[in-house]
Image 1: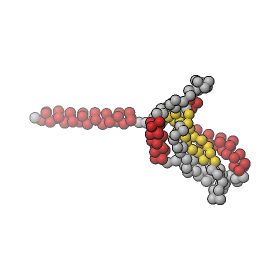
Image 2: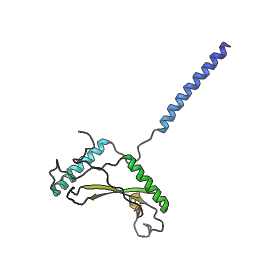
Image 3: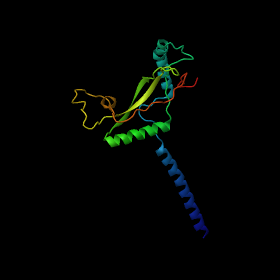
Image 4: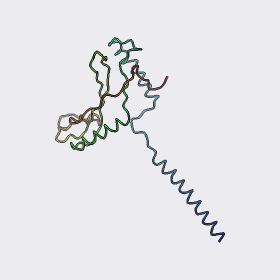
Length: 176
């Protein structure tokens, strides 16, 4: 009887250890890897600094901004929830229209000058597809696309996403 309790206890401990080990392996299997094309914040900071030195200062000077209190936008913020909602909208629109192979193309734009606002730069997204039903293919138009970007066309029956927030003055990639 005593041996049976020891064996049962040993079996229960072995089951517990296996369960913990299995869950640990399962958690590692669930780890999400960063998608292709991601960069470190240090790399992003380097790109941002190059933009500031070679583009942003020229834009500010051309617009007559002093570069401290008055700067053109150079960053745009969208909540993750809003981006998810927009992606759901794009997918639903694409499904309805028969589009496949979806993407987003981001454009720079400028708001009009008004009495309340200076025409700051904005960033907006337009959904794209590489499969426009009944559309002219790139081969037929003598273009030889080399990337998904070159193959993609803007979806004409979907709205663009705009009205993100931008900092004035802009926020830096890395806190300073």
